[in-house]
Amino acid sequence: MSAHPDLPDTLVHFTGQPRGQNDEPPDFACGSAEERMVNILHSGVLRGAPDYWADALVICFSEATEAGRRVMLRDGGGTRGPHEPWGLVLDRRMAPWR
Image 1 (cartoon, helix red, strand yellow):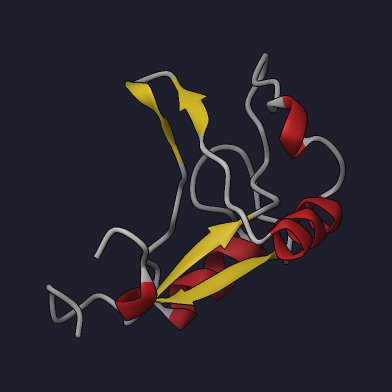
Image 2 (image 1 turned 135 degrees about the horizontal axis):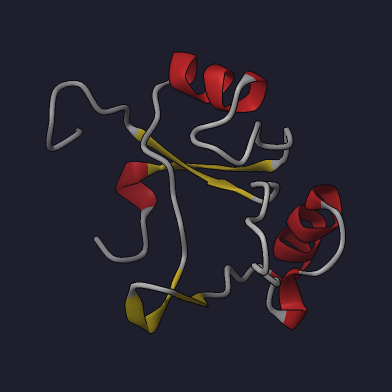
């Protein structure tokens, strides 16, 4: 299914990525990572937010493999530290932009 043989058939939207300095969440994304995930599940809506490199609202997904997701939860994916263990795993075939 993946366009690239090394990519998984799933996408992950983490709700608990550590924020950088002066990186304030939008109003709809306040609260804990668990609360944000519950809000998404209750509303059925993933909302986009402005990003420093885009003029449009964006929703971030990870294409990490299962092993890669474990590393992101344990060590993080950059300088901000590990992700909290809350998020949505989506089948790539069900992505709304397909």
